[in-house]
Image 1: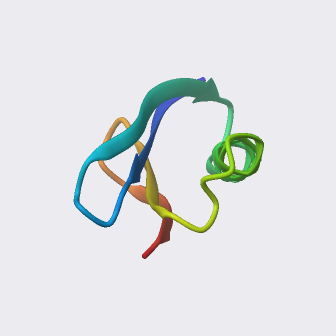
Image 2: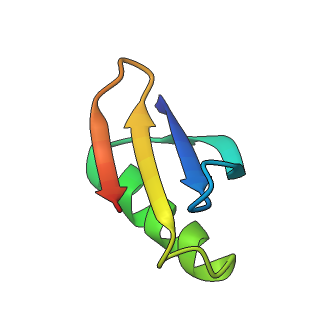
Length: 61
């Protein structure tokens, strides 16, 4: 299991969400990140999901 970090920003640069979660694969991490964005209605905000090694898994501006 790897650690992944999901961060969402407002247009002003303020962090709206900063949370971590575990996933077995990068594909699973991407799916979990997308699901959490939908649940919290942040899918249209600037967001990123990165691995604990800094690899970008999911990104939108």
